[in-house]
Length: 194
Image 1: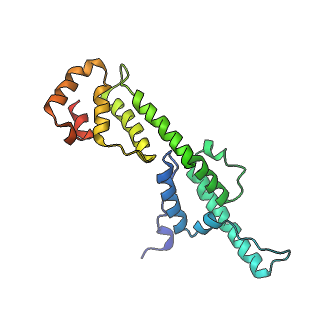
Image 2: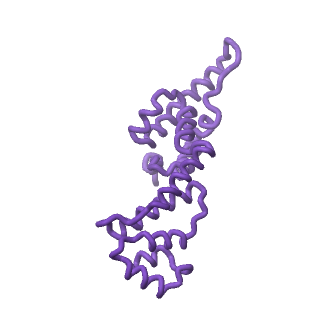
Image 3: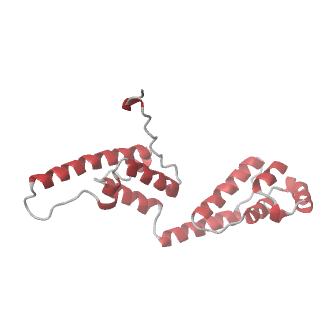
């Protein structure tokens, strides 16, 4: 018979640069701990000068839950991010700050997408870079663009890779273009050819 102490707690999602994914995981985690209402609404306050004993108890319980939610948020972020939110005193203010910083407004997202488009356009394989490294670098930029709402098909990525390889791969690129239907070629299949 298993006791409660043998129950494995779910790992706290770590913010690893993929904010949208982390946000979804962390929201689910905080909901499972019943702390999400603090993120949405903050610690309840009482209008007027003298709260009742029941109101004081509710506020104190909310403050304790808020401390626990803050602890989870602190564990989810690394030190460099933590140092940017030290002045935030509630879980809600921390969450809102992270959201503003990483998700941003529509204008900020458009600017980020524009920067990623430029990075993708000028992307070229570097001398001495392995094929796997170049594929990874290209796919990283392409996936960031997709995360910012860009409708990018595999054929666009495949064509970009083929036209931006170093000259020593020209014969391989020609062979691939002549022997394959690029519209039906996957990125994984292309990588295997190299």
